[in-house]
Amino acid sequence: MKRIGTGWIVHGFAALHVAVVVVCALLGWPDSLLLTALTMFMTVVICLRRNLTVEFTAVCVVLVNIIGYLLGHVGAELFNFSPEIVNNILATFLTTELIGWALDLFARTWNVPTSVPGFWKENLGWLVFAVIAVFALRLFIELFIFRGAPFKGVDIFGAFRSFLGNSLVVLAMFIGTLFFIRTGHDKHYSLDVATIGTTLFIGLIAILGALLHSFGLPFHWTFPLDPAALSRNIVVSLLVEMTFFGLTYMVEYAVNIRRELGTQRERRHLAEYRYMALKNQVNPHFLFNSLNILDAIVQDGEKEEASLYIHKLAGIYRYMLQHDNQKLVTLGEEVTFVTMYSDLLRVRFPEGFNVYPMILDKDLSRKVVPCTLQLLLENVTKHNAISADKPLRIGVSTDGEYLTMENDRIPRASAPVSTGLGLPYLRKQYMDLSGKEILVEQTEDTFRVRIPLL
Image (cartoon, rainbow, N blue to C red; front, side, top):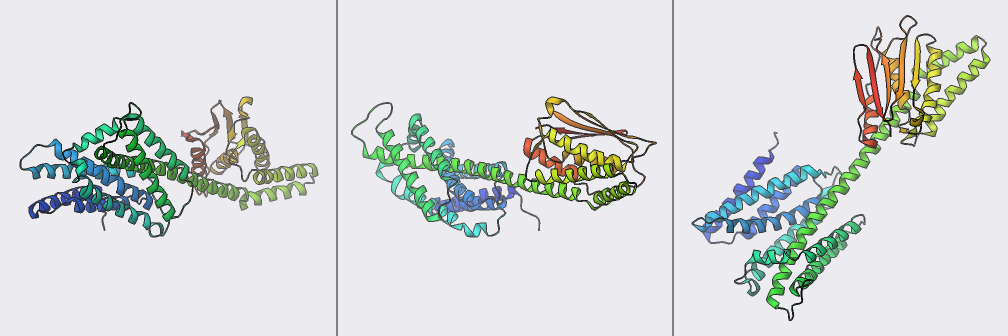
């Protein structure tokens, strides 16, 4: 079944919002709660479509409704059509479109998906709490605040402009919110404790912000307090703080999730690379060839050469074991290791195998991924014919920024068996560790790989 596009979802909900406004106007019913329910439903649908976490979805539900409520009222005042319902229709449609597309863009930009089975079921309480909180706040504002004495004859958005104009109070609220979220993000509280703590914090910050603004601080001192003005400021401060908290939480949560996903990706790539390197090191063909060569040396009675060969073969596996848990090694260590590996290959290919190192001394302290050179050298011998008639020349050099291995291209008569995983795994490692790409350049006669020095 073809997946419904985001455009159809947003346009569809915008049309439903307009339909609710029209029907409620004809029947003389209030439309606020129905519009709130539709907005929450649209938010959940978009978040589910983007496979977002339930906590992220819960914050989106609260934040989208607050912003949508304010934008809807601002939009209705911007239009001046007759009859009045036209203004409400335009404001509702444009607000729904705006918040729908903005939410989808935010979700795609920050990309905080979850793939843990049962994650939504286990954490559904967050979403239930968010839905209840939004409905409760909407009812409270509609029935007891904006229709009550404190807001009669008062420019609602003038009250918001006045509060937001107190930059020091607003800045203090934002810093306090940021500190609360960042210090509590890594602590794993139960849903009840987290809900109570968050509610108390938002309420306390909202009341403190309202008191400071009502007293005129820090610019001047107003006393005694006007109870109606204080009531208005508490409501305004509460909505501002909830918006601050929602936006800050969403960004902080998204950043931490992406960092965690990046760490998990690095671990997976490292595990894949180590497995591939280990598989190469214990490759049956390599062992078979090495033991056959060793047997031939012993049969020829070359005891010293056999002993040297055994020591170099042991050195290869010792290097692998010593650096198995290390992400990086110095280029000097890697050169020592690959020199032993090259010596074994020269025994196997006594003629036509030539390595020309041109590595700057200053680059020997730079870092590379373990077995980088060995992997590249193995690829060269795997994909090219080696003979005295057509010597295979391999150059290894550095320029302060990159390690380069370049070789002649001498295709083998029969195509080698290859998984094609070596360079991709190596590329993942360097991208994870440095953000830099491995550069592969190929011509008819040469093959060149450039590895960033770390």
